[in-house]
Length: 245
Length: 226
Image 1 (tube, chains in turn blue, purple):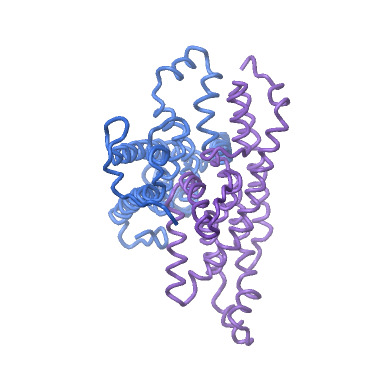
Image 2 (tube, each protein chain N blue to C red):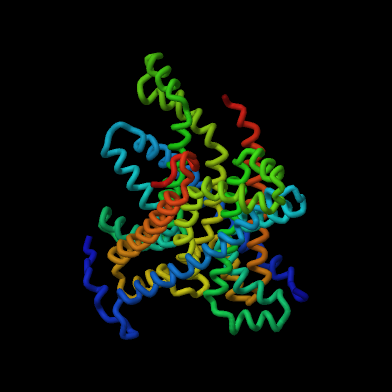
């Protein structure tokens, strides 16, 4: 194969006076930012939805179920395009103009990725709560706690610990899913990957480097959550099965 | 919302349907090929030969930690180079064709993890019983273990296929005309993003929602085993 290997191209100058490795670093930064912000949104909303789906109130369950059905059955890229190109046309004119002109792209991208991921988190939170024995809730109520307090003090602390391994893989997935936001103009790692290929044609080198970068991000997230898992472990209780060490 | 124009959808339905057909073709190809390769990988992973274990583990871990869009683009560019190296001729294969290969190879990593847990869900006694009957390794796997593993994992395999069906939309990265790609190209021409993207979202929702309900139904039907 007459492929011309050139590992040093990363240190060459680009059109805008930077070096190619600067592009990669900046992409890495955006990937991290979009992923972490989306994850925070997804955790908050997903937890609320997951709790709603386990309450005795039927209408809350119905809303939570409907949300999960909608957001899990439409591809991420289509959801992002809906947020960017369809929603601004459907809302009142002034709000639509503001979304199109003043609202930073990255905010819409984070909302899109966050709401998409929230459906997956909601599934896990629900599964975690349902895996607890019914006696936990009953004991809480018998002690005079309100329904909400049984969640806050009894059920959620256990449920989160149980689903932490599953959450870990979701948190690792979000870095990969964030690559799709390139399609709506976020200059994250995959966008830079594509751009560098167009400029240099050094496909193999850049593929190896970007693959390693995604590897590293997922690995760091995995370590972080494994650390949290260890720190929050309840002594004497074996929860979460095999875990992710 | 006032000027939602249904005629745009009707006029372009032929092109959209063509895109949807491509999406379904890639999904089915990658499902069959992916499950086949995935099963082989799972057997390698569970074999007693370390090199086979390493190969399977490496394969699965690499593909599971890379974004699919990146793999789609990388394979689209690298595949022709590899083919040229093998055959010595220029072989432009095109975006639409390279996606069949990419999805099969990529999904195999995910199907293999499902098959691995399926195989592990079969009690050890079954394997021992197979050997006691005088079966070879191949016979034990083919006649005893894999049919049960496959049956236990059928709902999960189908759920993964629904995800795959949605993921085909990422061929957008190389400009292939799948269902979403078709809608996007019409949007570029007619400037009707609301009608086009909404249609894609609704059709995807209806198909995936229906399929996932059917999988749930199937799950309760076959859950009786053991």
